[in-house]
Each structure stands twice: as C-alpha cells, then as structure tokens.
Image 1 (cartoon, each protein chain N blue to C red):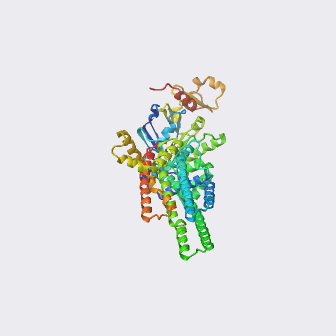
Image 2 (cartoon, each protein chain N blue to C red):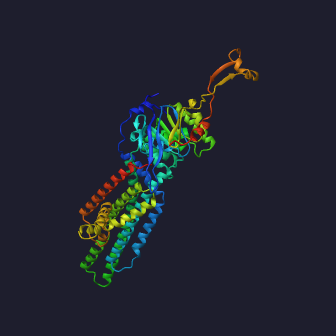
Image 3 (cartoon, rainbow over the protein chains, first blue to last red):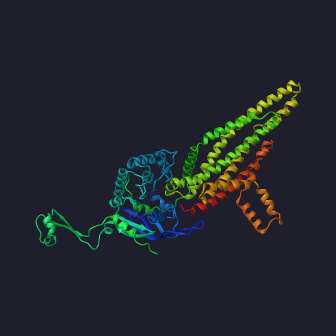
Amino acid sequence: MSATPAVSVNHLTKVFKGHLGKGAFRAVHDVSFTVEAGEVYGLIGPNGSGKSTTMKAILGLLNATEGDTSIFGIPSTEVASRRSVGFLPENPYFYKHLTGRETLHFYGKLCGMSGDQLKSRAEEMLALTGRLGLAQALIHEPQLLVLDEPTAGVDPSGSRIIRDLIIEFRTRGITVLVTSHLLEQMQEVCDRVGIMAHGRMVREGRLDELIAVENQTELVLENASPDLLAKIDALVKAEGGGTRLLRSGHPRTTLERLFIEATTEPKKP
Amino acid sequence: MSQASPSSAAASVAPVRFSPRRVWTLAYATMTQLMRMKILPFLLLFCALVAAMGFGFSTINPEQQLSQFKTMSLGVLQVFSIVFGIVATALLLPKDLEDRTLYTSLSKPVPRFDYLLGKLLGVLMLIASGLVIIDAVLSLILWLQQSMLFASAVSQLHSENQDSPEAVAQIHEIVARQGLTWNLHWAVWAIFLKAAVVTTVALLLSCIASSTLFTIVITFCITIIGHGHAMIREFILQPNLGSTATRIATFLLATICPDLAQFDVVDSVANGEIVPWAAVYEMTGIAALYMTVYLFVTHLVFVEKEL
C-alpha cells in the first residue's frame, strides 16, 4: 500500500453564500478523513448531511471555504488530480445523440486516449461492467473510483452486480470511495466508513471496529449443545473434546443501527 | 483491466495543459448535440424561404429587384444566426448541469477553459456550417436571378430596338454590380462575426446566471443595445447631457455591450457598394478582440463557478 493516501480531506468546511435574502448555508463543517490506497471507503449519511458536497470538493467541482482536499497527494484544485479519478454521479444521464460506444470514446478522448487503445479499452469496460456509467468512470484506468449512490434506481440484481464489481475493483487495487443508502451492501463491501450528519463527520473508522459493542462480550462456540449453553460460564474453560472456544470479543451491531443512532443524535451548535 | 498502481499516480504531477484535440472533441460533440435539436429541418425551411423570396419580388427594375432580395435574405440570415447563437448557447451549460454530463466531463482531466472553448466552438461551427450552406443557396439563386434579369432586360431592349452595345453593357454593369459578387460572401462573413460575438456574450451570461430565460432575455437586450452603441458613445461624449449617475451608467453600458454596428455591412452590400478588404480585416479583428475579452471574463467566472 502506498504511503500517500488516495484521498485526503483536511478540516474541510464549505459555506454556500446566501442569495436573495437567504442566509449563508454551511453544508460541511470541519470534516477530516483519509482514504488509503486500495481500500473501499463508504461515506454515508442522510440526505443533506454534506456527502455530495464533500465528494464535489474532492473532485474539484466545488472550492473549499476552509481546509483542503487532495487526491494521491495532488490538491483537488489542480486539474492534474483528476488524471487518476473516475467519477460516477448519482443517476447519470449521457448525451442522447451518442451511442454507448460513442459515449465511451468521447470520455476516453477527453482523457487523451485515442485509436485502437481507446476502442479496445471501451469494449473491455462495457464487457466488464455492462453499465455505461461505470464504464465511462473506468475508461482511463483510474486508480480511484468515486461512486455517488451507484445503486440508486438500480434493481436488486443490478445492485448486487455493482456490489460484486466494487469487490472486484478492490481486488485489482483500485481505491473506491462510495456513498449509498443501502447500508447492508455498504457493510459487505467497505473496509472503512465515515458517517456524516448535519455537515459533520460523526463516526469514522474501520467498519469492524465501529460496529463492535464495547461493553459486551460474545463467545463463539462450535458444536455447542443446548445444555452446554446453559452451563457455559462454568464449563467453558474446563470443557475439552470437540467443543472449543473459537473467539471471544465484542458482539456487533449492524451498520444500519449504528447509522440511525449516529444520525439521530442532537445537532451540535 | 490492468492492475492499478497508486504510487504511479502520486508521481504524475505534471499540470494538464491546453489541448486542441480535447477542445475539438468537445466542440464536435456539442455540434452533433445541437444538430440533433432538429436544426437541419429549420435550415432547409430557411433555404426554401430564401428561394421563394428570390423569385417572389415583383419586377420593378433589375437593380431594385436584386437589391431587395439581398436585403431581405441577408436580414433574415442575420436574425437567424443571432437567435440560434443565443438560444443554443443559453441551453448548453444548464442542460449539461441538469444531465450531470458537466460533472462527468469536468471530473476527467479537463481544464475548464478547454470545456468552455469546446462548447463555444461547437456552436460557432454549427452557425458557420449553416451560413456556408445558406450562402451557397443564396449565391445560386442570385446568380440565376441575375442571369434571368439580364436576359429579360436585353430582350426588352431588343424588342424596343434599343439594344446598342453601350445600352447592353450598361445593363450588364448594373446587374453585375447588384448580382453575385464577393461582397455577398463578405456580408455573410460579417453576419457570422456578429453572431460569434453575440454567442460569446451569451456564454458569459450563461456562466453567471442560473436561468436559461434570463440568459436569453439579457443577451437579446445587449444585442439591441449593441446596435445603438454609436448613440451611447455620442451621449457620453456630450459633456452637458444627463446627470453624473446616468453618465456613469451609460459608460458602464457602453463598456459591457459590444458595438455590433461595426458588423453592419448588409445595407452596403444590398446597395451594390464594394466592401473593401480593409473593412473585412477590421471587422474580423474587432470580432476577435471582443471574443477574446468576453471569453477571458467567461473563463474567470466559470473557473470559480460552484458546480
């Protein structure tokens, strides 16, 4: 894994100026996190929590009011940072006058690709993903994929295919930054998550650590009988034979429950 | 798909430079996008209208008939190119924003200036293509009309036994001056330059405004004011006219609006006057200067625009 994080967000604050009597709106407040190269990072939060604003700042589509963001060490304000990024916006539309292949060729040419290299890459991406949105994001072989609600408006089987693709991307060493409302799927694919609410990062870290419940302990037994369960406290240390104490640690809640708890906490001033 | 190597990305920090190839990709996509907006039937309709106009005027005398045809067709052509330039440009950015193609394009290594220039060139290429086609149709009709009128006038002289070589030469000179000359093409070129300047203004306004309607209305207002630029200048140069506030506002208006009267050669061409090369160079230079300034300001606005 490279020492340079794939994405670095440092004390990002974004305030949208007010217009026509409307006051200024603070969409993101002092958010910091990093996405290490090669991992899948889930940015989750309710609507209006500041996820999309954070993503846009990372992609250089918005300027930060305070703080900064960078991609593989290059500030997002520099166009060069986009060389290694593929972006799939939520519910993307494409030029209606272009076919799927023409659309991929258009985006490939924007990235400086041409000729047989572009044609073969377009075919490869269409075959791999079967989805134009993902294919255009991958056309220039980015090392970072930013996916904004990739499963929005997609049926369950399509949603599962996207989940499998995200796992495939990780296997190939592509870093993925993804937002989704499908928390179960996020739990399946993400190495780390950040939960945003009211423009702030309210939880952040490794998924398996975040969903651990600190004040409880669980015992995972193999081949345990009902009787054994009743006597477990007394017998477990003395038990031998086929019964083994496989693991002791913290039982886990679900990401969904953690999300609801985190996002319903009272708003900080 | 090849394995990604994160470390190589950190190393590639060379800035992304202006790329004519990228601009061409964007311009070509913009042009084909606009072509799909049913612009071709509109163009054919315009050609049919021009053809009908060419033969629709009653014969007063050859000179007047050719002059009327040029005035009408070039006038309509001017309105067509300006309306098309404004409306097409005003629709482009909001449409890309709504479809999120702006996000997918600008999240690639595409400098915003390349994007803007590509969009502008796409609109201008389509206007230019339309004008070239119409210019060809116009030239053909004018040449046919010119031949017919000359033949008709000579025939009339012959029937009146007045077809002396001097009289025929005089008719030929009148018809030739009002007929198909390079002046017609210069008039079409001037129309293109004016449309190009107005289109660049529309691009600037569409970067500032969030409403397409606002962009269209304000650009039309600027176009109208631009045709009266000489009056505004005259007002400013008169020291005793208007209050200080009015004079400042007028000065600002004169600074913002382009002087579109600089491109008004249609009347001269319709009257059979010769457009000198110097005038063509001057018009081209003025248009290039206006477009450069407006595009520069547009870039300054767009580079800071929150998407």
